[in-house]
Length: 317
View 1: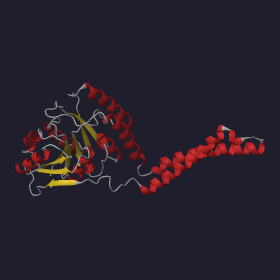
View 2: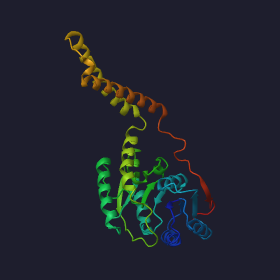
View 3: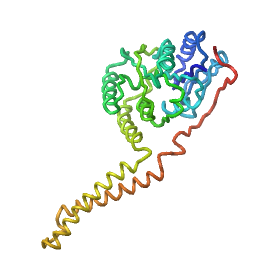
View 4: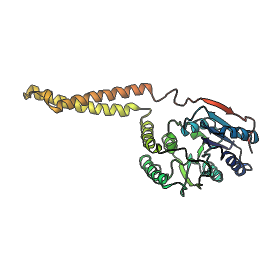
């Protein structure tokens, strides 16, 4: 199969039929493909629309979550089920243009990119969203060293191998290029794509994303650098603090024995030495425990799937 198109959605009933027909018009003559809808706990008629579409279009597959888990969870489940050699992700709100899919596919297949991220150079968003987005992208470029202009663009293309070897959870979908880079895939490209005004509904992402986003970036940077070797971070910090405290305590002990220092326990530096040794020991122990536990959590990607649509024997050409 050439292409898997993963479309996470939450309460997008108005746009689903139009989006599906548009993708069909673009791809029907050239590629074998599948569309995987991930209904992230919609409370409108989105699932009923998808069920209706699946009877008309045999290339549709769909998964429905029992509740809203978030975009990262939806993408992760989609990645696990994708069969195409190139995996395309896009939003369901018609702001991503399906006409971009063939060019994204060619960049992966012909130019050998691991990931191609869309760049919505001209955006149809309110200024309350565009200015924080620009700052966010500048910050991520600075920390990650990846020269992309639009990290959070929903329209992306991946080699199949890439999506099978990364893991998303929490709110990590914002930093997929960073995760891909730290997984060892260095061929990351960018393509200017058309950003269309929202036709139906409203954005499902509130102001809270501007609080969670920086925290998620710190998590990504830490986990990717030290996730498999936490002792390198905690152990190094712990040893440094313990050494500083030990040196101070040694000096105070020498001063008391050989220099007649009185009332050592009343000196602030004495408590600084104790604090450094205690915190250093705790950090070292924490690093040791983290090495033993690892960062594998059995519930991190455990989701309750309420319904599944499978059209196993039908691939659209």
